[in-house]
Image 1 (cartoon, rainbow, N blue to C red):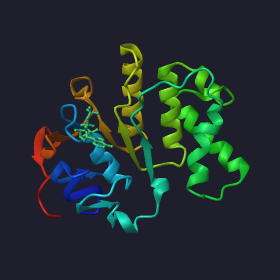
Image 2 (image 1 turned 135 degrees about the horizontal axis):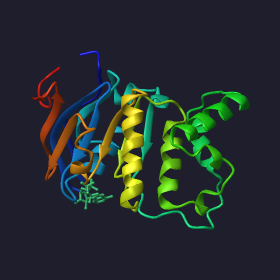
Image 3 (image 1 turned 30 degrees about the vertical axis):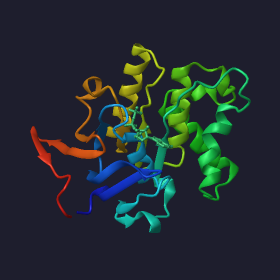
Image 4 (image 1 turned 180 degrees about the vertical axis):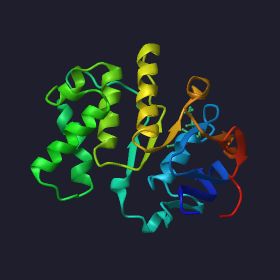
Length: 237
Ligand SMILES: Nc1ncnc2c1ncn2[C@@H]1O[C@H](COP(=O)(O)OP(=O)(O)OP(=O)(O)O)[C@@H](O)[C@H]1O
């Protein structure tokens, strides 16, 4: 019970009366690499936004680290890389450092300049972009920009990282590098990952949990453990 970091129970959600999620229950345990899969429009991004409190369900509950979402305060434990439709263009004025440091200001962590700098450098190192601190983000490639957005999500040392289709607009070779990076963050740094993806076959070997959505319902919440698939999605905990 202790090692459940994310739990959803009986989530229903509609946009303007149009039902998108139906009675969704699921869980993710500490150390999991969970893939949220399903066809276009199945409700994957919506489910992620509900887990993050960005959308409010019509009914049902979310728990983060054992706390109901409305009482959860330790947002520095959570990283989020939203779905990106467009690559930032050359004229975008923010530096890599400004982008990466944003969560430190938002989370009001009250860190000294030196502590902030150390966290920025460490998160850039984690994504293999150590030398890019002073560069303008709009001048980087799509794959490099995506690494910077991961660094931004990592800067507050999260325990749980949500990613929404992070490889959109990235070529195959960069994509492989990127998955290796996520695998390292999960297996070596112990960060629990919840990732919406269309490329399940590419990441099957690193994923140990699948949350399958079909037309707004969760049809599977399977953890692959010790060679045995275990469905623990709809049981009460
Ligand atoms: N802001 C919105 N207002 C109204 N309807 C929306 C909104 N966002 C999403 N929808 C609808 O809700 C449904 C689920 O959308 P969602 O983006 O969660 O699906 P998804 O599984 O992430 O899809 P994709 O794989 O295409 O990104 C879709 O039918 C979509 O058109």
